[in-house]
Length: 351
Ligand SMILES: [Ca+2]
Image 1 (cartoon, protein in one colour):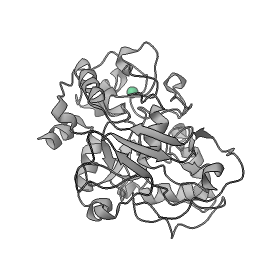
Image 2 (image 1 turned 90 degrees about the vertical axis):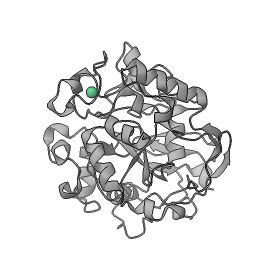
Image 3 (image 1 turned 135 degrees about the vertical axis):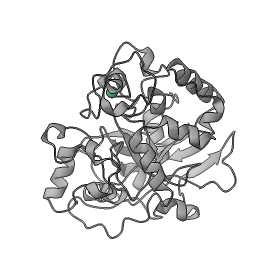
Image 4 (image 1 turned 60 degrees about the vertical axis):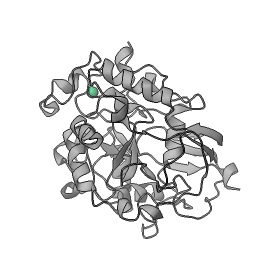
């Protein structure tokens, strides 16, 4: 029942991705989606049989074309030491401090999400949200994370250098909404890329995809905010904090009446340029972690047999941008609602 309701609530492209996703790699090897980050589950504990998650995933040394034959399995952590770095990154990353952190959706968070969804006319119940992202204590090493999702322009540089391959429209759930190959989208996130392409891009910079734990902590900070900017949903704010299924989306042909029309209007019916909403910055200064486009992590999802995606999308309502809202992607296929940013373990943490 819950799955059916979620499918109805998600945009067209995501629905198709979900249907395709039944055969996803991660689901078929779910028990192999392992973790090396120390987890200490708290209330409620992760269900028996749920994947252990979060880890150092495929770090590497050096920058430049490296080939991608050793990226590991989709959303399955590579058990290898982090590559030491001797300098602070100069390629648009921001530091996230390590330590013991509390993650996941508390019962209070879940009640708030229900309120947010109902305020936006969705009428979701607590049962519709399931467990969202279960609460857990995690020890994270300090890491750097891209301040923005990877743009088309940035990805094109990797393609031009011969280290990356172009997004494959044949494997994109809705190529009509792809940002690749369209000059006006040069500053927008590159979408319609697979997990392997994302990992290859990050690897070319001596980086990797973030784990779900890393992504969530960067978005919520030590206060455990529901959204990067705080606990107030976008539709109840005066300032524009991100790109969601808003009034602009509702006026577009692709909206197809999927969601109730909210009062919020960010001005974009589809994707938006990276960094367009500085008011939506996370506690550590990262942008676009809510709305805009869903982001890959290199961790399996909790209750769906796919890889974990977070952050909400231009084609999802504001509630889906809550940092604990459970969503996922098929690693084998691209989607216009999925992009990525890269992470790198900080030097001090790698020693
Ligand atoms: Ca929008």
